[in-house]
Image: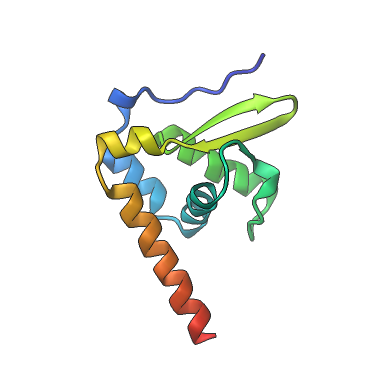
Length: 111
């Protein structure tokens, strides 16, 4: 079975998390994971980038410790590591998600 490497909680650094979340595509992935159920397949995300670029974004989120990925057959399932992040950086993930949703609402009302 193929296993993807994830940082242990004590290895997750705030700089890596903030750097990963600086990209709007990655924030979009995080928001969809926060809104949906656990274990969402990569294919469930409608992203405005190529498959190879979306794979890159998922890898950055995994390596930063923001998401957990696991294989299920040929699919890779994604889960937000909200418990780990909330313990390490209380309120950070909630603030990022809230800010992203607020931005989306403002953008939609301006359109």
